[in-house]
Length: 339
Image (cartoon, helix red, strand yellow):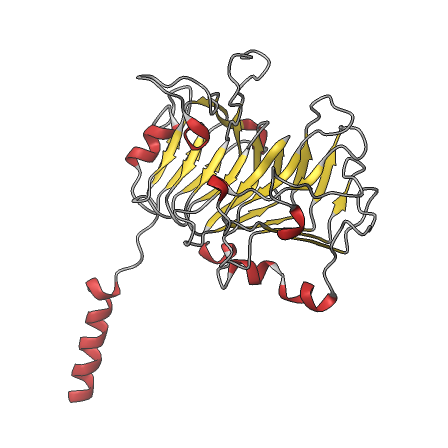
């Protein structure tokens, strides 16, 4: 009887609060035509609880969006047939006047800012369509499409569109590491269009450099500002670097030292990728007085017309390459494990 009683209690306990099933994600639908729960993305972010799902129907959604730190694990999911069907966009730049005085600055220009850890986005487009030609009076032309400042941020089949400073991958502070994963994404821009101090892995992405009309310098793909205490900055693995710019007129990157910080020693590896002819034989550039040779730049087994090995292109050894993998950069976090 005693054994039966214990079994009965165990079965009863399994149906009680202690055995409650995990709660399902709260799902909100954004639709510009009013057929969803909200017509704007920010309204959905404000309403959805942490861990929620924001499904976005095809359309263009204009206005800044901020995912706050107290809304972790949100998922944005575009419901179109392709990433181009859902576009979240704004049009302000660093030098755009701000109501009440001053300008927005680079961080303030972001169309979308992600401060919530564990954020994911799939099958949509983030853009900043600030028109440089239409605003010659604005000299601060950095115009960010997405700014991330959180850990464990993942993008899959997402497009990032802009010109200067399209994708700002950052962290809350210089000594705080934040990991970002991009898989199967499209990132385009011209000057420093992937930049910041985050640890970011871009796998099987298209990295498209826009032409600025120059025959010699059409910009820089990356501008990492990795803290010296962080061995992992940006890793491009199995990516395609493309452009319509003239041959040898685009640089892979240059080392950004925010506020002249000597400890911001950019780290960037491009490996097993296809490089178009727009990448020249000396693909790394100095940034002002900061020489690229003091940064942590390297390549490994790249191919294509822009991948010719020269003395100006540091190459990893096989042993070094074995230690610089997506798993090493993401340090035990797998973006695929959440769902």
